[in-house]
Length: 272
Ligand code: DGL
Image (cartoon, rainbow, N blue to C red; front, side, top):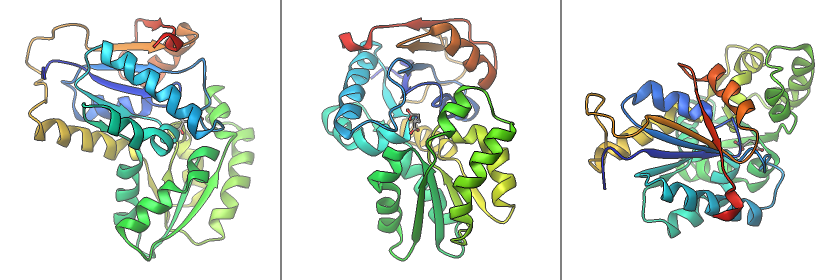
């Protein structure tokens, strides 16, 4: 496998860019091919079978881009499809859930952890399962927050409407005396300051994107696949693909990532 090959990263839309941002921060030498399934978002309210079918198509597309490893930068796809695609793909594939769960289990002092995510992620019970496998007596309280994704997509990151909705969702978790809260959806780190204010400083917020980038760095190093920053770049460093509305994605990506995103290409993902 070529060390200069890109890492493939995918999400249902723009949210996975929070993971890309961490990868760029921690391993700036890597090339990245990102796919955002903007035509078929949200994944959070879809069935397991549908999310697996979509994920398989995206993996086939990423393979045509000759990636050396794949990051499933979507909690819902990690919850529903990670095991299936790991079993079917020869490349190393990592998701965001193990990383987030591990950080939360290390961070908690009272053993009470909250997880917020899409209906799919929370309904799957995957965070509870993974965390209790790591430490059996951990108590996990899940809460789906379905309106957070559209609020972020609309750019309402600091808005009274967002405050009101967040306060309704989070009040359930406040009553559980959690000391750690996993932001178990790619979009939620963008609402961090609202969530921080409502939960208070005593609750540790865990962003799985950070740990996922650490896991990717370690995985590439262990397999001798890390690209050195000083090696000559063969091909573009960052490439972005979506299944709908490339321009909207470009604006969002430019707002989130360091540096301007010049181009996003639209592809027909159903053909893969
Ligand atoms: N990317 C999804 C996740 O992290 C959120 C958006 C969606 O529902 O598709 O679960």
